[in-house]
Image (cartoon, rainbow, N blue to C red; front, side):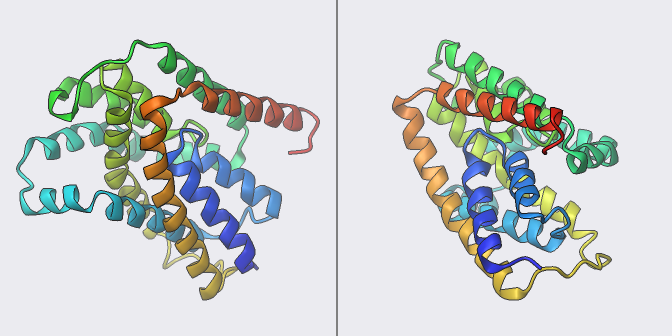
Length: 260
């Protein structure tokens, strides 16, 4: 049975790591494993992601309302183009990546790869492009990086921010587009998980822990979005690279000795 405190901590992990470039899926796997909650259930997963989706809606409500009122605008097309690669990869290889996610066997290596990409992106000469300068080709490149983040410990936000830098975006603009792009990505994940909610027999979490976890995910996610945008205006990505490198090495060592 998932306690309210465990759900609260997992909500904090989801909200923080969804928008920091360090992989929410990888950290949630570690958190569940440490709590002995490997079978915590889809309800918890889905609600934690709903929490982070709500955080995006609150932060970007004006932009999202504009897209709803006038869907036939250039930003809509950019988001569609950037979302398509992940949709294609997800639909074609869903079972394969689901098996990898459950086993966690590649987790350490994926954290190391995330670190390398973050470090590489930090060394890349920062561009001056804003959202209005983003081309459809640029959106497709960013979307391809997002598709690669279907591996559990390859950070979606990290890879899309780095891809944005490669296309010449300013750091904070790359983060802005990455977080906006998270809206269809998270929504799609919720829909995919939702297909199994009514057939799942695992009932290891009550209503109160579920609400606590969702609220924590939303509040921390909001702070993470605002904080990350502000952070990237003056600070580098490489500190996150150092963190995931250290985490990846520890996971590989623990797996080697059969501890994790």
